[in-house]
Length: 72
Image 1 (tube, rainbow, N blue to C red):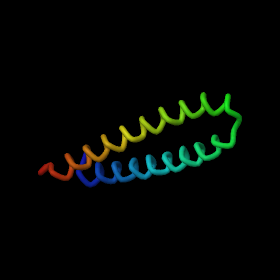
Image 2 (image 1 turned 90 degrees about the vertical axis):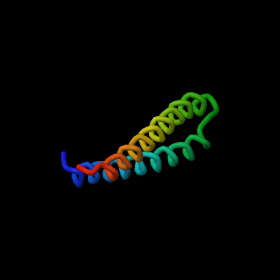
Image 3 (image 1 turned 60 degrees about the horizontal axis):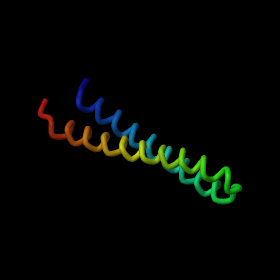
Image 4 (image 1 turned 45 degrees about the horizontal axis):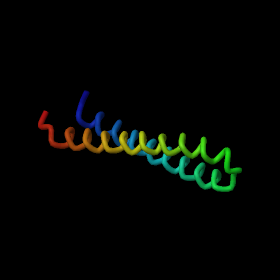
């Protein structure tokens, strides 16, 4: 795959991650007004999703860096 194509895919994936993070943040705000029993279960799921998104973002940044420094 060409460098330009890889970078375009990285950029698109980074945008999707940013969108997902925004959606999760909105969900967390909505959870804050939910009954306590519902909050605990849902907030754990949302927190796990945030953790996975952060890891994905880190991996994409590392991939982008590798692609940018690759000569061929």
